[in-house]
Image (cartoon, rainbow, N blue to C red; front, side):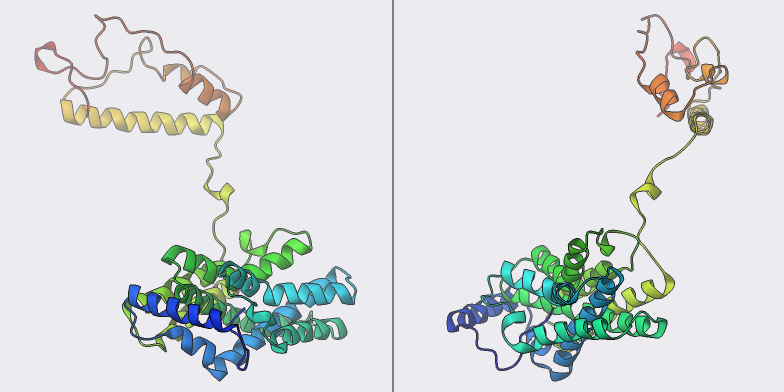
Length: 330
């Protein structure tokens, strides 16, 4: 959720503090311009900001419709989705009255979106595409505004980027939690949080490098473009299970034997000795005769059993150099 509406009257103390922090942030990050001023004062961006709140209200209302909520449920879900991220950001920044409550526009747009979904069926393909495009554009704007406002209040880089992402996707997270489902940004959904993160980082770079204020719109566009292409191509981030090794006992044995064979080859190439595989001393020879029920059983046997102590006079079977002295295969 973005900036406050023109004509709002925050407390004078807050205004002085914000001005001082903004000047300090520009000095710290070497910025000679203030992109935040562009984001909060441009009429076109303000319209996009309010349109994004309206669209979030519509999308939340469509969810409430599928869950068969009543009018109160529609209103609460619409307000939480459209305004939740900005409210959280302003409360963390100790902004005073959150921008969402500084005038009637933000609440009115969120409620209007909920009313549209309550009265009109919005679950049609063309409308979903329109909502997705507008939602992504607003997401990029909210991420930039949240990051710029956080930097203006003197936050360091990481907290400012985090609040920028929170401004963009916090409302969706609150909406999903209210209806009892896992937030879409936690996996399987479009890369909204990733796009917001890209925009937040690029917005910080605009401040850090002292780039002209309109450059922040490039940050908004790039983050929104990434999220839009991800939604179109159905890209998702790898889930935890996709990074886990899931092998049968026989596959794991083959992998270990192949790795060990390559290791012996490297030893032979470096020492000039030929490693001999002897069933009496080879630590993997019993793999050919033992049948493990699972990969876990094999791991327990291969890596967690106690190793017998090696006698002092026993020579390593790996390699032996000239003169009878054992040479390591490193």
